[in-house]
Amino acid sequence: MIDLGLAGKRAIVSGAGFIPERAGHGRQSSLKLAEAGATVACIDIDEGRAKGIVAEIESIGGKAFPVVADMTDRDQVQRAVDEAAGLLGGIDVCVDIIGKATWSLVEDVTPEEWQQDLQQNITQVFNLWQIVGRHMIEQGTGGSLVALASVDGFVGSRYHAAYGVAKAGVISLAKTFAEELGRYGIRANAVAPGNVGTGNEDQPEGEYAVDPKNPLAAPRGSDIANAVLFLSSALAARITGQTLVVDGGAIIRSLWGMTPEVIPQFRSLY
Image 1 (cartoon, helix red, strand yellow):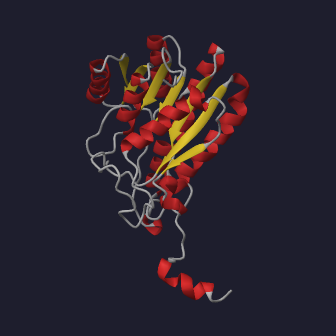
Image 2: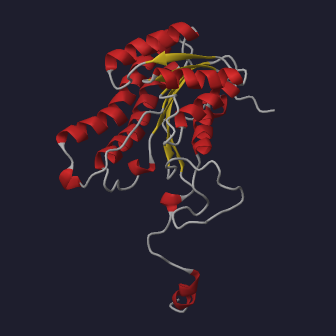
Image 3: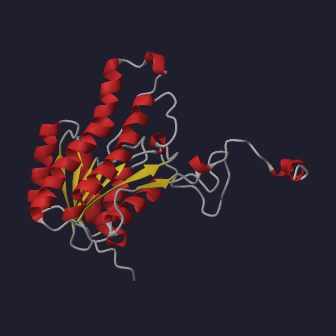
């Protein structure tokens, strides 16, 4: 049995509630952390969603608390983190799930949409990590910070430019927090999901390369949660400043459209 080192740890998940039309990264990450033995403060803007994930965790024998806050508002972030720290008795793990894209042609993006996307996808990550980081520094026991980036932070972000810029910022932010807070034993990492969409948990096992995007298979919400769990755990004790891409291989694909049929003509050139 591999020990993840999360038994008795105190975790907060920002954006923990489940929105049915989305992939459920917050819900699944909260459940994974609880299953590994952590007590989880489940933060969500919607009270029903916060209480819903707490009820799920308790139904599997875990321990959790609901915290209601708008995590795009810095004052509420401070209040929510203080409340969570009080309920948990401290913070060892912080996971930020929140993010949303505005879709538009670059020539049509409004200043308001631009600012909204940056607030939702990068500014709120900075605010949460800074505030939680201060708690962890004061505790003196180290800790793990994890946030969701996106493969759009590595490649072009067609029709949702601000989202791509923000997610590239999360990748950079993980490196900066890692470098500055490493002396306190605090790690900072990100997970970059690929084409999860609204979720595909019912995808059959053992079916690979069934679409043109993913050389392996499209990632599931549970795959993203597993990456979050790994980076939060003792297995990643010496991993910091990194972004773990979970995309079924989508962004590693060659751009040139080569096929097995053209190999002979290229071999004849050499």
